[in-house]
Length: 445
Ligand code: SF4
Image (cartoon, rainbow, N blue to C red; front, side):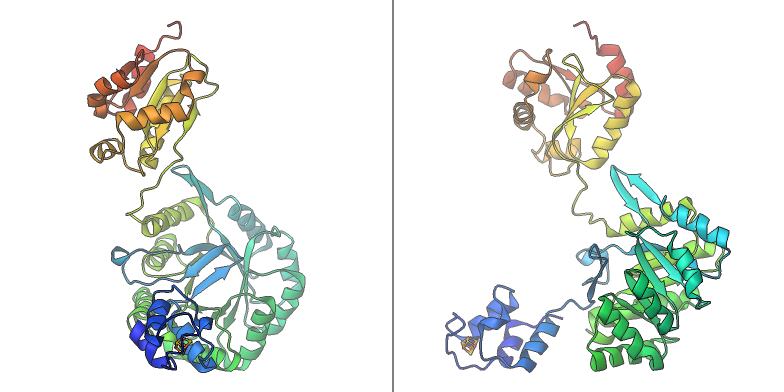
């Protein structure tokens, strides 16, 4: 938990020598607490104090970066409504070397197809986690040949010698699982030398804490991910909740790390129950041993619900879009707001009409039509401004603008601001657009 200005002040030399550029140690401490200045501006802070302040300013749950592209952990609250959740959990598929060869090949192939489009964005299951139970390097090598080089690939086994061999032939994105104190050194050195996060496990939270303390104190390695032991549904939720509570509320550093759940050998309903609990209750990585798209689409959708900040509406880029093929100077021109759901309600209906159309999207900070109108973010002036910015008068030879039915009230002002234009009030519901366009649009006009 971050230190207050006064707490930092107590750790400073208190000589008010001004070398840091501040008139007093207290003002420097206040600036430091507000993250307006860096610690090294004071030349008199001891190494020990530097370490205390640096550690205290870290988030209660460490942020771990996987593959230089996925951030996990770094959360600061128990409940999303308190502020927000920032780093979406990763979803993964588990492949075991004990699976039948054919199953392994099919599952790897299916893994690459776990990509879905939701409201215009692409989402996928990111992680492929390979688990070795046979310690047979040749077999693992055969499996690796089927895995694309740019895959975010984790590898877990209990034998650090196998892991060492593997790191010589393949770049890995995370490794583990350290459960046995006798293997700690080898695992940690491999994680350090390959610069990858290390998964730490144990039968109980007590065992996990002991191993983490050893790794942090003895090897000063902190790129750790906690493997949650899965024995029962209730206990899994209890462990996840206890870890998050202790990290956030008590600033208990040994458990201030992201978590990973490996859900295997479950019936589909049970697997979904565990994975859902993992996503909802603080899992940072949720891995399942199934590759069916319906399972993964459900989990991706749930993740979107939890990690989408409701205070920040999803938006599309405000600009002029061509919908439904090659638009011409005779194509209809419609206008609406840049709220994603609005756009993705209107776009398919224009496609359904089979009339290629121009769709002008006005920047309304992601508000829907009526809300944006009430907030003065979707008004006649903004529409006219967008028409000018997009050079629409050069792209169409008619002067007709179709506005959403809910803002029919704007038509008079628009007519005044756009002399020579005909403002047509469209339907209130997007589903009526095809019928509307077919009934009013005459390409000979
Ligand atoms: S340089 Fe250090 S000791 Fe001097 S005023 Fe700044 S904080 Fe205080």
